[in-house]
Image: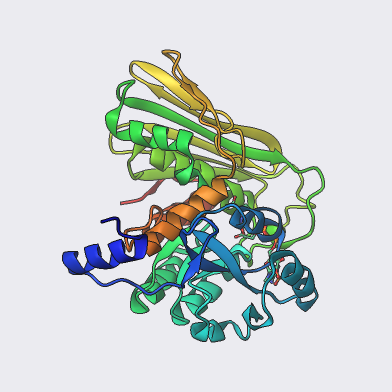
Length: 362
Ligand code: NDP
């Protein structure tokens, strides 16, 4: 007898003795179960990347939106065939609690607002997907984790690289160490933004700055490449355009020391283009360059090994992985506990830069 997915999941989960969180009854053209996703904040990432990616996911479907800009609604409704009843504002998003079309609320607003809306989403009883960086402070991250635990919903952070197949090979090498012990990691990410728009990305209250916006990729890479948590950090922040970067960092350098003795040198900037992850080991080296762009992530190693698996959409892979965790009631790949670890270090980086001292991370 061939069981359909729902019957299989029900039967196996009952046999294993754990309960399933409910999810919607949407099926794709191919008969695959899909979970309903509501995007919160219809800015650049939602409009140009996530919503298009949701058109090619196998296991999820865009079913709702939350926006503070009502004029955006007609275009989104027309483009994605969204019903009136699934349109929300930030003030009405708690009503999603009563909407069976929506299983997941995906927070894609400025970083300084992640905690506010992620908690609202969890309190609506829906699973929460929260963009990177998880929030501005460790305390905010913890409050999101607590709200999701209290409401028994899953929480995942939008670190798309951890779902990308070439990156996953490198993550695996943290354990298998095919080139021997890791000595140093260099992770550099930056864009030469010649004329930065005066948006929230230059506003410290809303979570702007190179370190929050881009530096977390380098930091996360240092952690997933070594598979270790750093024990100390030193950092330096600077700007060559103080008239633009009045309250946020343009460039941040940071150095992390790991328990094994490995050292990671991170660099992020809004004034210089750079996209490389380089890992030097006792018996060789490997690199991904670019390591964090939406497309074209590729790498090589000292023995000629190539990391060149092509990817149509990192975000589609990420959202399908996260949807399957809901459908199968399995652990998510990038939980809140992963996001909070980075933000704790980001806070230490700002402090270390200000004090000019190495900070112990305990
Ligand atoms: P945008 O500035 O383009 O959009 C943010 C949207 O948030 C706005 O359009 C608005 O949507 C909503 N919003 C609500 N309150 C505010 C406010 N006070 N100020 C400004 N906007 C507000 O940002 P992005 O889309 O580029 O980034 C959003 C999030 O996604 C960030 O956390 C960022 O770090 C993350 N991101 C992640 C990427 C990745 O690769 N994983 C890539 C890019 C961004 P509305 O008008 O609908 O209310």
